[in-house]
Image (cartoon, rainbow, N blue to C red; front, side, top):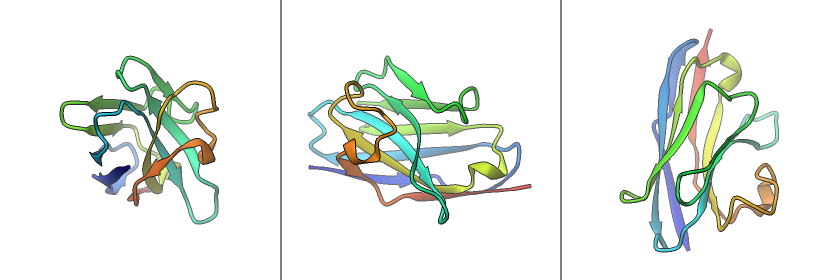
Length: 126
């Protein structure tokens, strides 16, 4: 079992930056692929980015490529999402998630992710 707790959300103006964190606890000896998703009340949960267990492989949705950077500190059991050049369309609840491998199943397939946090809210105003 892995417990995930997100933090770092908030309100920011368009063009601003935020850094989200996701602290993992529990079975942290097992190497997991980690990811970020986001969801608005009107839309389905949308995949944003993922990172392999080693941190050497990173993957991004086209909508955030070049603006968001995913990283992890395995010594601190923490996942990060650095968000820059934020747009109102980035407004959503952001969730971190974990599964055993980044490969095989599509990263955007929500049902393939085993563990989820409770989310942290990001609001970007124009």
